[in-house]
Structure formats: structure tokens, C-alpha cells
Length: 293
Image (tube, rainbow, N blue to C red; front, side, top):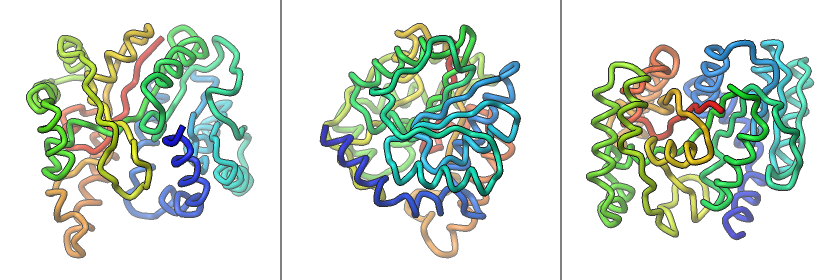
């Protein structure tokens, strides 16, 4: 598919850039995602085996391996896996990395306690996502968790840009606002999940999406209620929603030289101290949804 071909070409030619983004000293969106997954692992009892699908340059797998967990990473870009192997040697940890597509390899049933996929579902078709979720259910142990990252459609209401205009054209603004109000007004994860369950729906997706820094024409976005509905269809029970890349300043000003440091400080604060607080999700450009088999 063109979508996957564009994705493979981008990540194969930008492995060095991805390595830099994943290891930069100040705030990193990639590190924020990893913080959410590590929180899932921390709150899960006795994680023994972990899989990261679309592992990039391997930092999350290495961090999990340092916890004494048998950690594996899978990515379809050979250039990314080369970086993974180099990073593993430098970190001196025992981790496994494999180059290949999740849809082409065979994984044993009832194996992993936690599966992570960050920056993955935006690059696969909706039909492939059903296959992915179905296979994850089989591969997870009973009671195991899927930590699934997504670009956040709720944030389109907050960004006030071409993404906002797209939601206006699709007629989704009112429904997205309803989700945002629920998250903003929920005192706990349990309350948010319960109330969002009543709003579960699947939204229409545009064929093409506004281009950001990644040159892939189709990069899907989901809201929490949308993703919950898709996961629940496959027998996964949503448990928690984690904010990723909080925007405490207007999107139009965060790249200004004098405002960028403050934006990163606020984003790092939420990642470090408020990662379990779902009230920050409507103002975050991504989120991680944990669901249990």
C-alpha cells in the first residue's frame, strides 16, 4: 500500500533523525510515550515478557530490559533495527530485536504480559488495525495489557488550525467536544473510562491528512472513545488513558524562540508528574490507551 511504502521510506531514511529525537536531553515526545508505557508496566503485576511493535531505535525496549524483563522489539525498517542493535550493545542489556512486519511474522499465543505500539496505528489501514488488535489479543496472556499510542483527534479542537477546520468539515466537532468535557470533568481514570464508554463511536476518517513533519499522506488520528470502541470489539477492556505531549501554550506560538523552552517545560512537567491524570488528554497531541485482555 502507498501508505506503508511512504512510511517505510520515511523511517528508513530518517533513522538518524529518529535516534536524535529519542535521545535529546530536553523534552521528547518519544520519551513521553515511553513514560506512559513504563507506567503501565509499573502498575501491572509481575511483567515477565514485553513486546514493542514499531520499536524505532529501541530505547523503550532497552529501558524495559533494564527492569529485568524479557523485552523484544519489532520494526519493519532495517535501518532502525541496526540502530537498535547498536544501542543495545552500548546499554549492555539483554534485549531482542527483529526486522519484519507485524502482519508477516508468527507470534506465539499467550506469550506477552504487555504489548506496546507507539506511532504505529497511524500508519496502517483501518482493516489492518482490526487484524492487529485481534492478533494482540491472541498474543497477550490472559490479563495482559496492550498500551496503544495514538495521535489525538481531541487535540484538533485545541490546535485551532487546519486540523480544526477538517473536523468542522467532517461534522465531528460536537462529538469530540463531548469527549473532551468528559475527560476534563472526570476525577479518576475509572470515572473517565466509564463515562467515555457511553460515548463510544467510530468517527469518519479523511482519505488524506494535513502534512506535518512526517511526509506520509495518510496518518490516522483517533479519539479515546473511538479507539476504545475498536479495542472493545476485540475483547480488550480499556483501563486508563495517558496524556502525551501536553500543550500548555497556543499551538501557533510554541515554536517561537522565546516560548519554545516554556512549552517544553510544561510538557515535561505533565509527562513526569501528571502522566496518570486524564484531564490533560484534551490538550495533548497524543495519548496512550491501556486495555486489558
